Image 1: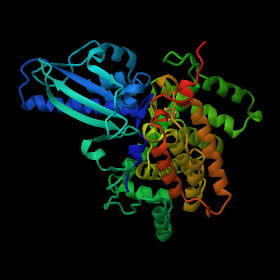
Image 2: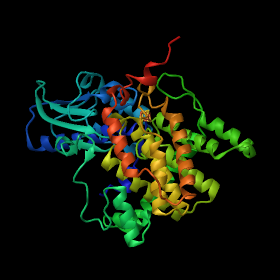
Image 3: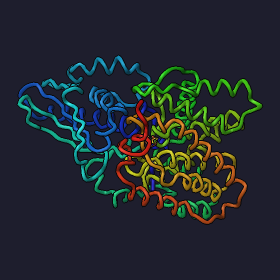
Image 4: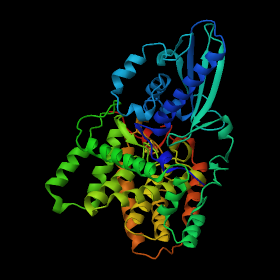
Length: 461
Ligand code: SF4
């Protein structure tokens, strides 16, 4: 199996990888398709693009800024570019039915007010996060159509690719034959590590090096870590109310301030919460964030890593090993289950992030592959069954605090695993399988639709 560390950790913007980053990438891709199609066909006049959002995207797309993401994507913006732009005025300007910047003789326009449909009817049968893009000619006749799915973490699948998902979450055909140390399960990962006397980070590094030079890999890993640190810093220095109308105030900066004033009265839990909440408040504000493995769960890995560097003196080499190990575990979870709240609930987002962070921390502290596997298993196990029920479709309640608790569990799991031998009762593979089955049996109300749980329990007064 090979899912690159650079695919799991992607620099972009909040608030959601599946509802913001994925749709932005999909829209950008469709705009390119349209340009190619118009280069080869006559459209006989001005055209419009229509986008129909299905399933969870229709239910919570408004709160997750999917409309803004689609507009920006159709105008050619990629999530990684958007992170450095002032987005609100840009999105407002582009929403005024301007022609798309396509190099074509026929003009193409898109207005989120009239061309974007939040279709809350039956979702597409293949996946809960469906998008239908159409190019309509001046008579309103569809001339080009593309159906795709946002499958979590900013990843996309088209109709052909989604067909390769089995029942429906386990991906097949992802085992790379070009990878020197390809593993599709944790058991295979541990066997390879033992056979070759390599750490998980070393195997992952060699696998990654089959696609890019080692220098380039290190440069990109360092850029990911810098972006994560920037997110922590931005969140710890920002005050005020988060957008969306819930009236949720930022708390990370004030919490951090109190910790700095009375450090002798603090525990790692307090710092981890402050760091994780800082990142997720930034995510909720639609600012710079790194998928880890998703936006909703973007605070867990940076919080644990930031704590490791700031409070334990973690080195640059250890940071890279942390990220590589975390990515190995995230890849296993994505390959054998899911990292999408719309597919399996929050166990796949914050649960996966916690397992990744636990594994990364355990490895960075010198844990053996068996201890790393145990750390990941413990962290994931205690998130099993966790639903996704964001209030008002916003990635704020319970998401922001939940990242703090995911970081605390990761820290505890890594510490506990380091004090044991790595021998344990429940294998990580079995835990990932339990997560997959639990997700399949979970009601759709708890899969990023805001139709159940906390989302419907708030009393209006
Ligand atoms: S509840 Fe969890 S899975 Fe759902 S949006 Fe929030 S962080 Fe993501």
